[in-house]
Length: 196
Image 1 (cartoon, rainbow, N blue to C red):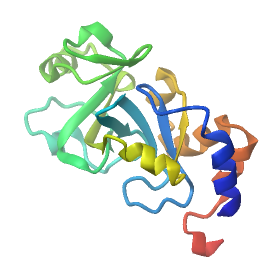
Image 2 (image 1 turned 120 degrees about the vertical axis):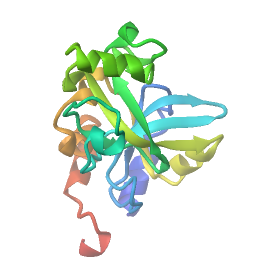
Image 3 (image 1 turned 180 degrees about the vertical axis):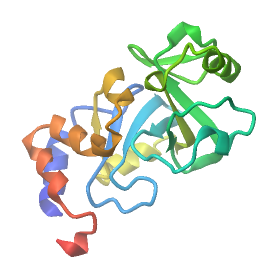
Image 4 (image 1 turned 30 degrees about the horizontal axis):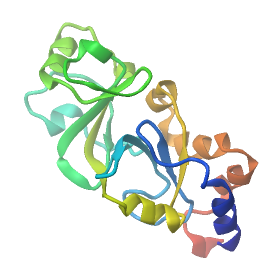
């Protein structure tokens, strides 16, 4: 663990949390929601942070969650521990979805769910253009800074293509590899540190 902490101290001072960046959990974070997770920050300011875990699919479809939703075979993800009874979404549809907010170039969150339903019914949207989440990840003011000081997260840049990719089962690993050799070997650590 000491080597990990030393590497984190060297490399994480450069990039701070910001809207459109991702948080990559350190390999031994054992929290149910955040274990080996990648969180997309949709908002980050002095009041706190709002994000979605983008690599944790659930075994339910949209119609299992919302009864009046049109049939649409898009996967649903566990966005985080807050408001798990609510549905959130990111998409690449931009202005086609009223009230959506841009996170980074080409990637948006939220907007008019009725517009989304209508686009599904008339076939103007595909599963590669939208991802749905149950719940979200939230931090009050300074809470995320405290977790970063404890080396729970790495901060990295991303893009719309990576966030919308189908291979979410390897997103944590590929995100670490994108940070370079110092972090690529973390993917070889066992999920349970007692097994090391």
